[in-house]
Length: 89
Image 1 (cartoon, rainbow, N blue to C red):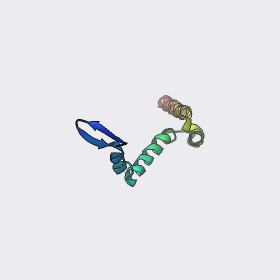
Image 2 (image 1 turned 180 degrees about the vertical axis):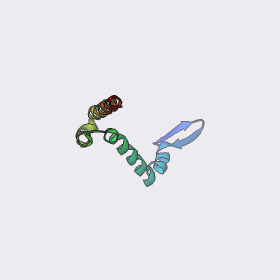
Image 3 (image 1 turned 135 degrees about the vertical axis):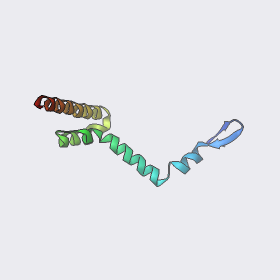
Image 4 (image 1 turned 30 degrees about the horizontal axis):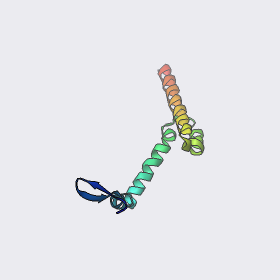
C-alpha cells in the first residue's frame, strides 16, 4: 500500500496522477519553454547591451542572485533610455 493515502474513504495515489499528467511530452516541452522564457527574461527585456546581459545571465543566472542582478541591469537600462527619450522630445 506504499504511495497510497486515505481521503474520505477512498484510496488514491498521487503517483498514478503524476504519471499520467507529468510524463506527457507536451507538458514537459511546455514546462521547459516556460522555464527558459523566465530564465532569459532579462535578456528579452534588455534594450541596450543585450549580449552582455545574455552572457552574464547564461553564466550566473542559475544562482538566482545572478538573475536578479541581470533583471536589475535590464530595468536600469530601460529606465535610463526612457529618461533620455523624454529629454529629447
